[in-house]
Length: 236
Length: 80
Image 1 (cartoon, rainbow over the protein chains, first blue to last red):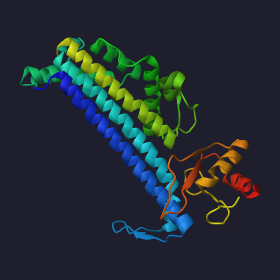
Image 2 (image 1 turned 45 degrees about the vertical axis):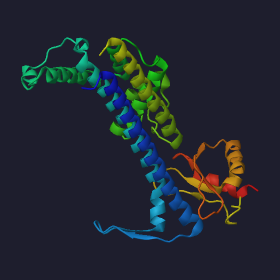
Image 3 (image 1 turned 180 degrees about the vertical axis):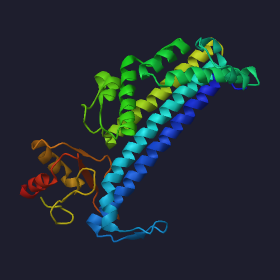
Image 4 (image 1 turned 180 degrees about the horizontal axis):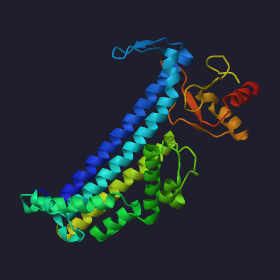
């Protein structure tokens, strides 16, 4: 069985690779839409496409008319996927750690059927770890990092970077759950790092995506490396 | 303002639900940016410039949804 350090290394590398692929995906699609705009607007390219499934048709003017809105959607969707990637990594690190170090699992009541469904002690530990993590998922990001620091006995990121990530996550939540319109929930979650006022459209420009990408990618690396060092130190 | 490659006016495109944008050869980008900044118009420039078939690289300048595309067009048309 792989050591916890090896498991954490694998998780970190897998998520960094996934984020790099996401960056390539966004960039490539951005370039392709721009290529269409340049080709039609400046080089008089003519096109005609027909969707055989729906029967809809579009010429080059109609395709170009969709381009700027499509780029906006591209940035937003990739931004959302970036945050999802971070959340998956964060909880996978905690799950891997808690499965090896069940002493950190919170004292709480669990349903008997959760334990009854397990056939090995390992499965019980994983089930209890998952149950603990479910209770944290709906709390603020600062509380996620508070729990991580308690588990690792070390805080991998300073507060300022956690606050930056909190704004990114809050913006994603607004785009996903409130039609992109900034509300009080965003302002509360983003705190001093809030970039918009209530009622604003929470936009994601190309530059916004790049800033978020750099922050999230580095956070994954720093959390992964910190967790590996702690796992080695704890002999897990 | 004339596009140095097409020899036609630089056009502000405004379609769909996203904000307007314009395309300009990279060689003219600074002039356009200076004009927009002087007029305090909020904009951002794509990171990439695109060249097709060896033609001059083209930059895209983007504007937010609240910006008046006709106002920007007048600004460009009146500029040298």
